[in-house]
Length: 164
Image 1 (cartoon, rainbow, N blue to C red):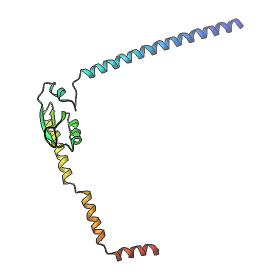
Image 2 (image 1 turned 90 degrees about the horizontal axis):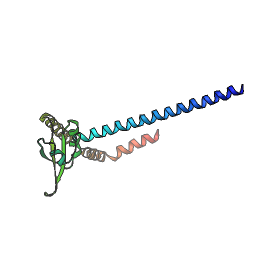
Image 3 (image 1 turned 45 degrees about the horizontal axis):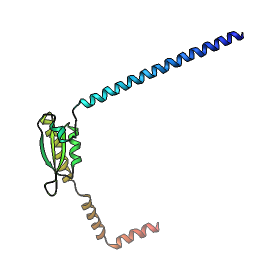
Image 4 (image 1 turned 60 degrees about the horizontal axis):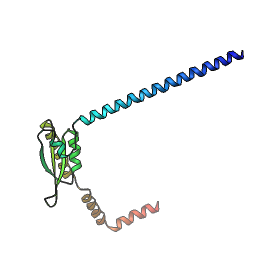
């Protein structure tokens, strides 16, 4: 009886060791496979041309026509949003020779329609901002209107609230 228990214990220890070794080997092979896959993805990313915002050298190096436009330096982020949305590749540079410095945007797109759509969306947003009423002006008008209200009316309202 004792000998049978010892044999089963030894068999259990051996089979557990085999299981652990197999699991460790599988885990190591899985890790190596994932590492190779991520390296292949990184290599594929490096081989792709840059998209969106880039340097002028990268933009010109893609051997396609590059166009530039002067843009106000105050709203570069607004333009970048529309350029990304329509898939336009662009580079922004600052022309320091002029005082105050102006910003030039060099851009290219596969379709002229995409470029046109991006600039139309950007200009529509700029015009919409100009048409909106100024919050400060409205606030000043309201403050003036409150100042013009006679003091007696204000005091009567306060007295009514206190008496309640």
